[in-house]
Amino acid sequence: MDEERKPEDERGERAAPGGATRAGTGRPERRPIPRVAPAQPAGPPKLTPREEEMLRRIQAALPYVERDTRVLRGLGLLVPAERVHEALATLKSLPGVLCDHLSCVSGVDWQDAIEVAYHLFRTDDPEVRIVVKARLPYTGDEMPEVASVVDLWEAANWHEREIYDLLGVRFLGHPDLRRILLPESYQGGFPLRKSFVDRRPKRQRVVRAR
Amino acid sequence: MEGRSGLGVKGVAEGDGRGARGTVEARASEAPPAAPRREPEGVHTLEEAAAIAREAEAGVVQELTINLGPQHPSTHGVLRVIARLDGETVLGVQPDIGYLHRNWEKIVEGWMYPQIIPFADRNDYISSIFNEWLVCRAVEEGLGIELTERAEVLRTIFAELNRLISHAFWFGTYAMDIGAFTPFLYALRDREWAYDLFEKATGARQLYSYFRIGGLRNDVPDGWLRELADYLDYFEREAYPEYIRLLYTNEIFIARSEGVGVIPKEVALHFGATGPMLRASGVPYDVRRAEPYGAYPRCEFEIPVGERGDNLDRATVRVKEMRESVRIIRQCLSMLPEGEVLAPKTPRVLKVPEGDLYVRVESPRGELGLWLVSTGGLGPYRMKWRAPSFVNLQLLDYMCRGEKVADLIAGLGTIDIILGEVDR
Image (cartoon, rainbow over all chains, first blue to last red; front, side, top):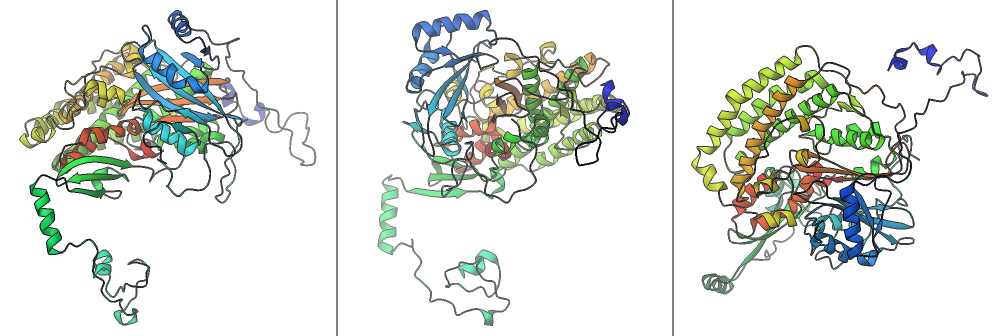
């Protein structure tokens, strides 16, 4: 924090001692802000012994399940899109896992595919934290499809409607797949997709993340 | 006549197809001639009315669909509930949400992490500390920032104080939902002092932007902790017993709440309910225990649990949680160390490593979750806000089936929704 409190000219952001100026502007050259590397662990995040045991059990029951190493905390699982319902039903009843709390269903657009994620917990065992993900490839404006899990957890009902509404994923077997947040007559596309164009008048842009 | 009763403006003529709001003439003589009076639709002839009466006597359900809201005060914001009724009995309800939708998940996609904190506050505006805590925790966990002890304890104090006044506010509005007006005034009176405390420390009464990634913006001012202790004494000695006396000795309150809107344990889990909704049904699940954060691992507190899952249990759980909050703040005050409130090793450029992270905190309404998908940039690639009220509101239909219309309002009250969070 000491660096923050130094007078301005010592920080080197203004008035560099060499007198170097930015080309054409006549203003002093700005030294780049020091970038502190985040504490990024090498290799995939480590699993606890309990999570490793759960992964073994799950893979014994469902051989097609792979571990998702993008998940920084908890156990991440990747399943093929057509097996999502089966995988979640198994996680709900598999001894040693027995997830009983579906906390969240959400999706993210990776431009070529939409990834849906199911966050599962167990109310009497805090060590069970599972994320099940499935990739649904798509092109253009088409709506990829995946089986609904409303029959397993009613909690998924509104979450799935929200994904249908904002990301454009069709959940097969959903009892009431309608728009939920946007008006019924909305024609502007799927707002959470990266290809979505905001047609409102432009205001000054903030710094975009890369 | 219809135009006049709708707006209360004299001389509004109908018949031009634009409805009552289309034109407002200053003088009646300026208005175009009124259209000939039509026979209103939906009025029955005498024979039809007699047939309906016979059917009703024979026990045939006469279904009626009514709209509750979106501008009705009992919906706690802009929520529209489409209710199917048979007389006074509710056959089923369908909440219609999205009136406050602003798609903030999309808006923040391009923002840097520190920019998100003030906007996150606007989601659950009654208890906004929890929103900013969640954003800060997500980034801190992603970056592996260790907070100073003073910052952790102060964060816990602020969160519990916010939970206290959030539950107090809920208590007032619920009492109003079931027909008692006075408790609302008492609850707001007691909330005022807490808001003053927040204002002294953070500069704002409701939307604080006080937490920073790596700690807090500033330390609390001199004498603040002593005043907080005074407030807790006041709350425990005067306000809390008053709430109990006002409600639990009130026959109407008990009669309106007991056995109404029952949610069994299995149903609550099936619907993904969290917070007091789940605990009132008998599941002792609390993120503060399941995934301890802040200073909670070092605090001793109980998790109040109900038995039946009716409105009375939900009320009792919340009232008991107020007392537990006071207890937690007292413990935090006694363990509060001296020191910095901002972690000295906080990087100036915050880039969460590539990957994704699901972080949760226990807000007064339940489990507040954030799914942060990062591609290693300065801001999130995708941010999913798991709002507890959004999930809990799904239970409204289950709770109200077979109850009376008035119990629909009471049921909506015990879910404790914040529409800013439901619609996001």
